[in-house]
Length: 338
Image (cartoon, rainbow, N blue to C red; front, side):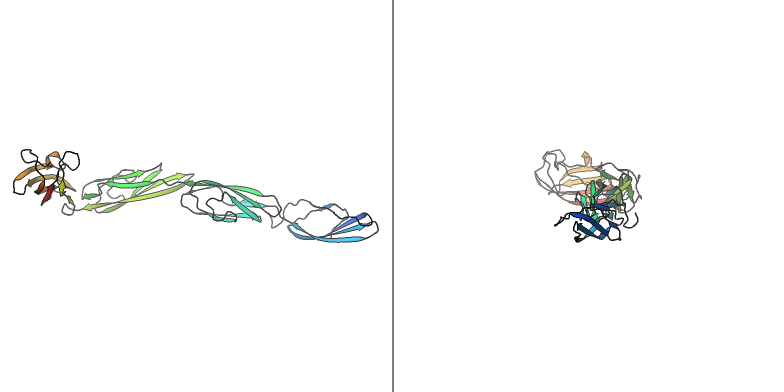
């Protein structure tokens, strides 16, 4: 549309003059452009919006004339344009829209997620998909409407874990990405030490302490969103650096909780020897070349004959073999509790 020009409709001009002594005999309308109309009830086409003066002369049968001046306000028909169409976003994104056209009033319905529902320019951060109806009106002209839909892609949760999270150099660990929805793909970074960089549960054998990031991609209507999580794998270069786990108490009471006492650690392949003595120096348990975490390497609080011992403090000594054939030794005390 060119400027403020529009396809105008005739404006009705009604003569509401009351007769005086004599009846009304004639009327004359004088318009802003110098044109005249001698019809008491007439009409005028105004091709442009604006304020226009108009004069009415009322003449009775005696030739008396009365004059009235008025201003005609011509409103341009309402026009409304929303340049951007329906859209799709990832939750958390901020959008801004600006309505264009010719209007004096505008409203966005519903007002949900909007900073100002009665402004031509709005900012919104929707938490869920929503459809807006935009209604605009210019002066006395009829209102017009437009619609706008915003589809919001809800985030897909991801949680990354590793079992174990601390390893000896050369040992594998299992990375697990727990994903709470449908995704298009997953990418792990860095890919060093991974057997698969685009699967949910790769094996990792990093050469040094490494933080692995998993990023998932999911989409709707051609729009792709991402979520990420990470886990750090601590790598020990030798058994001497890795923690050896030896409890200081245990309760061999048959309840299935902490019933046995043994040596645990990262990268241990075998217990070369493991001996336990009472406070008088009598050996109550001994094992050699036992697999790690085996029943043979577990002391259940009995003496060499299998007799249950009374609560007390016992001394242990051990030698363990690491996967790099390094031998580590240690000793300490453990308390038997019942």
